[in-house]
Length: 203
Image (cartoon, rainbow, N blue to C red; front, top):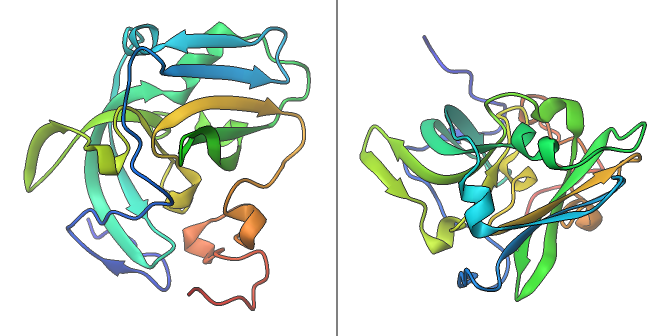
């Protein structure tokens, strides 16, 4: 079966490393995962509590806005939906922000996503990966260790978050880190939704 390459993309078998800011240095004693926003009660989970959650293994295609696409990377992690067991959402919650560390700020990076798109096996907070060239291994610090959110293939990869640190539940959509800098709110690679302004150019 031939994979569909989104417009403006090229296929690579490597997993390029791109990120903002410094590589986060994991410290289990200070790490926590926060569930907050439009919920009845906020929750903070320790690293051990997160890693005790049920695991999902899923093969997900990645499409980066910098024009590379990598097919058939298999990840092991915690499905987004597993975190919903810990919070009672307010009525009309339809969006989330996924947060990650950026230069020491636990919530420095964020990406907005529609809640309904994240209920499947292809919305994962991952910690292990493999592909046809690599056996199972932990993701590296540069790739987002200890936990990285990988979005479904219907979104550009910036909608994920390295060094994931929490989920904010929202009734109204709100731009994240790159969206505030002119990137698309919806980010569908198959529609080439790279920019908020369709006339924008990637630099």
